[in-house]
Image (cartoon, rainbow, N blue to C red; front, side):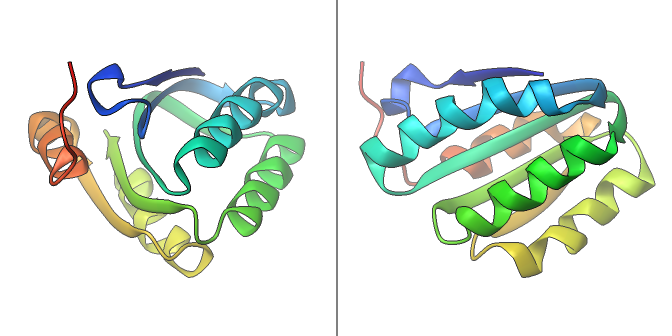
Amino acid sequence: MTVQTDQLHEGKLITVRVTGKLHKEDYEHFVPMVEAMIKQHGKVRMLVDMHDFHGWDVSALWQDLKFDLKHFNHIERLALVGESKWEKGMAVFCRPFTTAKVRYFNRQKADEANQWIAEGLEAHV
Protein backbone atom coordinates (compact mmCIF):
# COMPACT_ATOMS: atom_id res chain seq x y z
CA MET A 1 0.00 0.00 0.00
CA THR A 2 1.32 3.44 -0.86
CA VAL A 3 -0.15 6.67 0.46
CA GLN A 4 0.45 10.11 -0.93
CA THR A 5 -1.12 13.51 -0.46
CA ASP A 6 -1.85 15.90 -3.29
CA GLN A 7 0.32 18.97 -2.76
CA LEU A 8 -1.83 21.01 -5.17
CA HIS A 9 -4.61 20.75 -2.62
CA GLU A 10 -2.36 21.20 0.45
CA GLY A 11 -2.70 17.58 1.52
CA LYS A 12 -6.50 17.60 1.68
CA LEU A 13 -6.59 15.03 -1.13
CA ILE A 14 -5.09 11.66 -0.25
CA THR A 15 -4.37 8.96 -2.84
CA VAL A 16 -3.96 5.39 -1.64
CA ARG A 17 -2.68 2.76 -4.06
CA VAL A 18 -3.29 -0.81 -3.02
CA THR A 19 -2.05 -4.01 -4.63
CA GLY A 20 -2.01 -7.58 -3.47
CA LYS A 21 -3.42 -8.39 -0.04
CA LEU A 22 -3.47 -5.83 2.78
CA HIS A 23 -1.98 -6.68 6.18
CA LYS A 24 -2.13 -5.03 9.61
CA GLU A 25 1.33 -3.54 9.00
CA ASP A 26 -0.02 -1.62 6.00
CA TYR A 27 -2.49 0.13 8.31
CA GLU A 28 0.24 0.90 10.85
CA HIS A 29 1.85 3.01 8.10
CA PHE A 30 -1.35 4.34 6.48
CA VAL A 31 -3.43 5.40 9.50
CA PRO A 32 -0.97 7.86 11.11
CA MET A 33 -0.43 9.64 7.78
CA VAL A 34 -4.15 10.00 7.13
CA GLU A 35 -4.90 11.01 10.72
CA ALA A 36 -2.29 13.78 10.46
CA MET A 37 -4.08 15.13 7.38
CA ILE A 38 -7.45 14.89 9.14
CA LYS A 39 -6.04 16.73 12.16
CA GLN A 40 -4.72 19.47 9.87
CA HIS A 41 -7.80 19.83 7.62
CA GLY A 42 -10.75 18.45 9.56
CA LYS A 43 -12.12 16.71 6.48
CA VAL A 44 -10.18 15.07 3.65
CA ARG A 45 -10.92 13.37 0.36
CA MET A 46 -9.54 9.98 -0.57
CA LEU A 47 -8.96 8.25 -3.86
CA VAL A 48 -8.28 4.54 -3.42
CA ASP A 49 -6.66 3.05 -6.52
CA MET A 50 -6.87 -0.76 -6.47
CA HIS A 51 -4.70 -2.69 -8.90
CA ASP A 52 -4.45 -6.48 -8.70
CA PHE A 53 -6.06 -6.14 -5.26
CA HIS A 54 -6.77 -9.34 -3.32
CA GLY A 55 -8.50 -7.97 -0.21
CA TRP A 56 -7.45 -8.05 3.43
CA ASP A 57 -6.16 -10.60 5.86
CA VAL A 58 -8.26 -10.83 9.06
CA SER A 59 -6.16 -8.41 11.13
CA ALA A 60 -6.09 -5.84 8.30
CA LEU A 61 -9.87 -6.07 7.88
CA TRP A 62 -10.25 -5.34 11.61
CA GLN A 63 -7.91 -2.33 11.27
CA ASP A 64 -9.95 -1.10 8.30
CA LEU A 65 -13.23 -1.33 10.21
CA LYS A 66 -11.74 0.51 13.22
CA PHE A 67 -10.46 3.26 10.91
CA ASP A 68 -13.85 3.57 9.18
CA LEU A 69 -15.74 3.88 12.46
CA LYS A 70 -13.28 6.34 14.00
CA HIS A 71 -13.30 8.57 10.91
CA PHE A 72 -16.98 8.20 10.00
CA ASN A 73 -17.36 12.00 9.55
CA HIS A 74 -13.81 12.93 8.46
CA ILE A 75 -13.87 11.71 4.86
CA GLU A 76 -15.72 14.13 2.57
CA ARG A 77 -15.46 12.16 -0.69
CA LEU A 78 -14.21 8.68 -1.41
CA ALA A 79 -13.42 7.57 -4.96
CA LEU A 80 -12.67 3.90 -5.52
CA VAL A 81 -10.89 2.94 -8.75
CA GLY A 82 -10.73 -0.75 -9.51
CA GLU A 83 -10.76 -3.60 -11.96
CA SER A 84 -13.35 -6.09 -10.76
CA LYS A 85 -16.99 -6.51 -9.88
CA TRP A 86 -16.29 -7.23 -6.20
CA GLU A 87 -14.30 -3.97 -5.92
CA LYS A 88 -17.31 -2.14 -7.33
CA GLY A 89 -19.38 -3.79 -4.58
CA MET A 90 -17.06 -2.24 -1.99
CA ALA A 91 -18.51 1.19 -2.83
CA VAL A 92 -21.93 -0.03 -1.74
CA PHE A 93 -20.59 -1.96 1.26
CA CYS A 94 -18.67 0.99 2.74
CA ARG A 95 -21.51 3.55 2.55
CA PRO A 96 -22.96 2.71 5.99
CA PHE A 97 -19.52 3.29 7.53
CA THR A 98 -19.04 6.86 6.33
CA THR A 99 -20.85 10.12 5.64
CA ALA A 100 -18.64 10.58 2.57
CA LYS A 101 -19.96 10.75 -0.95
CA VAL A 102 -18.73 7.44 -2.37
CA ARG A 103 -18.29 6.56 -6.05
CA TYR A 104 -16.71 3.65 -7.87
CA PHE A 105 -14.88 4.09 -11.18
CA ASN A 106 -13.52 1.28 -13.31
CA ARG A 107 -9.88 1.53 -14.40
CA GLN A 108 -10.83 3.01 -17.80
CA LYS A 109 -12.47 5.98 -16.02
CA ALA A 110 -9.57 6.81 -13.68
CA ASP A 111 -9.32 10.32 -15.14
CA GLU A 112 -12.98 10.90 -14.31
CA ALA A 113 -12.32 9.69 -10.74
CA ASN A 114 -9.47 12.18 -10.37
CA GLN A 115 -11.67 15.02 -11.63
CA TRP A 116 -14.57 14.09 -9.34
CA ILE A 117 -12.45 13.72 -6.19
CA ALA A 118 -10.77 17.13 -6.73
CA GLU A 119 -13.93 18.97 -7.85
CA GLY A 120 -14.40 22.15 -5.84
CA LEU A 121 -11.02 22.06 -4.10
CA GLU A 122 -8.94 25.22 -4.42
CA ALA A 123 -5.70 24.57 -6.27
CA HIS A 124 -2.60 25.96 -4.60
CA VAL A 125 0.78 26.09 -6.25
